[in-house]
Amino acid sequence: MTSKVAIYARYSSDHQREASIEDQVRICRARAEREGWEAVEVFSDFAISGSSMLRPGYKALLDQIRRGQIDIVLAESLDRFSRDQEHIAGFFKQARFAGVRIVTLSEGEVSEMTIGFKGTMSALFLKDLAQKTHRGVEGVVRSGRNGGGLSFGYQVRRGLRADGTALTGELEIIPEQASVVQRIFDSYAIGQSPRAIARTLNTEGVSGPRGGSWTASLLLGGAARETGLLRNRLYVGERVWNRQRYLKDPGTGRRVGRVNPESAWVVNQVPELAIIQRDVWDTVQARLLQNARTAEKAARREQGGQNIGAGLAAARRPKWPLSGLVRCGLCDGPMSVMGAGGRLGCSNYVERRSCTNNRTVLRDKLQRRVLSGLKERLLAAELVEEFARAYIEEINAANRERGGRKAKLEGQRAKLDRQVRNFLDLVKEGLGSAALVHELREVERQREEIERQIAEAGTPELLPVLHPNLPDLYRRRIEGLEAALREPDMLASVAEVLRLLINAVQVFPGERRGEVEVSLRGDLAAFLHLAEAKDMRDDRLTQNGKTPDITNDIRGLSHVMATCDAGTGFEPVTFRL
Image (cartoon, rainbow, N blue to C red; front, side):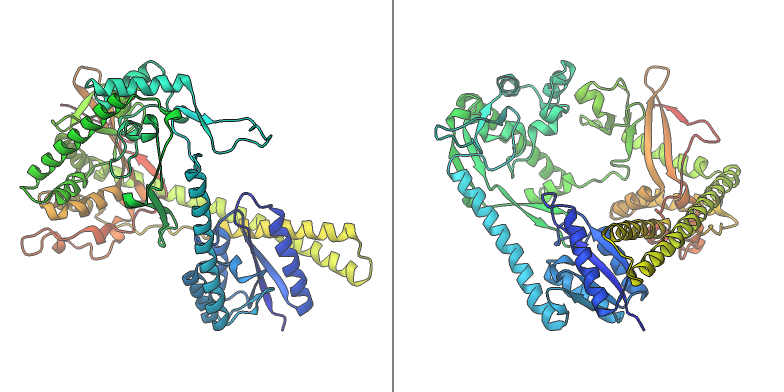
């Protein structure tokens, strides 16, 4: 019986050629032909590092292994799958569990010994590469040149040295941007707030870094990493490098910054790049430090005198369940807290003047109104039937489209299969040529693309089984949320549930002064699947006089099939604050 082979190919960065994939596939196909194996599928990833598992081709290959549809995985070398020791060991375990062999052109058939040795070597390679790169950049910085990245106000200097070699790693000041930097420092030194400075610059049409808008956070940054325009020491003639290092989160594959100790920082004096006078710099830094101390004291008072670190952590922790969900109805920008009164206003209006929505709304009143809208209007009994009908129609239409597309693709695949067989028959009869081989490769490439599209077509969506008393049941759950809001320990759970039900709370200016209109945008799929949540029983609404943890009831319902506006079927919630 002929063994079925899946070929995997990958190259790491944009600096490599896409032909690298073709070369890997070509030599793997040649090996499969020599062994008498049938190459049934090719998986590939373009310009993605082997240290990341978040690769579409790699994930599709794993799915094929789990399904038991292949006998052998073939690649150029083991590091094509991964350079991470833990990941490559996990890949080997899954393949072995499924009864799939792993064969590479470099190592032959992979065994436990190969995994241990090669995995260690790949991990050491990555570590060594990172160390050499870091060492090289450090040498550049210590020689007085730029180690990478550009701050507002500077550009890379172009030209030739006296010996004819090109200038590299040298910066020069952009006079127009330098005057903006000086203006920002002068304004902050005399007492203007970062928000007011940003608003003025945006109103005047002054272009920000990379052509963007100015914001208070862009100016302030963070003290620990010395980020933000007002903390950038380059403006006073000091280049600081190696403030932080980046580690890759093994769960997400994303890089996460970690602050290095100051003893590891590399500081060079570059007076020729100074834009700000030392006395202005010192005044600005003193004000930044004073404001930080004031924030620390406020956080400590809020926490009843506990230590500063814990107070600040608690002060930064989002306590409001709707945090991040409230958006301006005109520009879709975030609504942020303005001042100490707990009123929300459009950030784009306040900081950039790029929006005309100058209305504000009290957080507590908005929260009560949102819960009321969820309970009384978003799933009112007279709307459930219409919601369900629209949702099921969408599922059926999507299923029909998905099924029709998949059938068409499968027909195209069958046609390509016949073409491949015809080409192979010609080759067996000795009628092969370079042109015929080229055509065969093109047909195989088309077939691989069709296979990918068939896999993406997926399976039909299941229709929900609706609870016969969904509106009343849903209303009781919202009442449970309201009760949970009165218990501080439940705020995090309530926020999680609300984010499953609400996509956004949009605030529009009303016709009269002080009036706003609020529109809820919710996840229709989560509403209609609500009755399918486990343990959704009325007797769980209260347990020993306490509100139960209801997050597990709605967790997992965030698969979105469609979204609907709460104003559909009735007027948006309008109220005067």
